[in-house]
Figure (cartoon, rainbow, N blue to C red):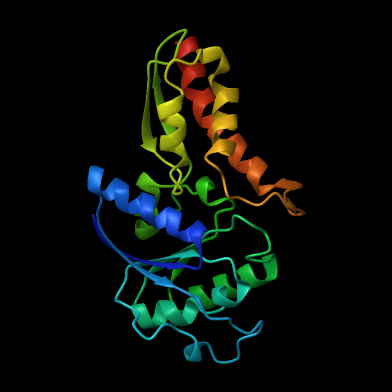
Length: 233
């Protein structure tokens, strides 16, 4: 499926994700086009006129991928969606300070009013299918990691069927080879930290945990599930 992605970034966090997506596009089947806008200017805390700060060169897009760490930029998403013609928006929430719950609900409502679907995965590597064709197309390849693991007592090969957008799943998969399957889950958690995972270590009051810890649990589950299924079969 062809898809035009407009990625909004601010720093290395977003650049790393875009680079990983582009690398996988070269190696795999996605027929996607990715265009990027990097916000470098300082925006006011409250934006009265979003049009004043919307990028001038917005391309026509099917989906917007927001990888920004500034809540002010999140306020621009409905206006950017209108200008690009996007049908869906994915907003990375790897830090609760980036998208406070009140702001999320506001933007979800504004996007819904103009017929644009949205997803706010916390962390981004928790993304799964939502029923929207554009979000689901992205989530076929990037989101909650899904792994296939070969080997009984020792990991012989790890195949990434769906990887974390940041690239950590491929990093973990390459380094699990030769690890005892009994140790693979814990090793995967350590490898995620070494990558390193850039999710926040700040406690998210809504979930009672850090987003970094949530990311670690996600990758460990991705390793545990195929090993457990194999041992039970």
